[in-house]
Image (cartoon, rainbow, N blue to C red; front, side):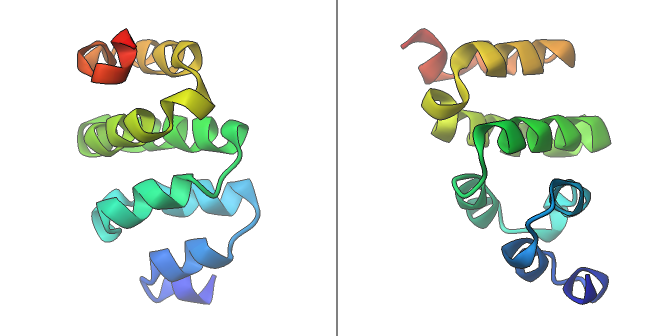
Length: 104
């Protein structure tokens, strides 16, 4: 948590293993490199990834929607199209329908 308090969220996330800590940090997308964050989701389990996307959309859908769509686009096979559609629809966000993987 020292890294997080110092504003070093990327470094903090590299060390966190508890989902509560991860969700607390990952919602601050404006402080993280988008490329790094998308790659970071490749290290999470399916369940944790979906929970983190949900936390990001809950915290600030306007700020975090684009990066969530990028994460969904990269990991749609692992996360499953149905789970992603259900998640985005629960926020009344239909951008997911305009991604290439939705139709594959």
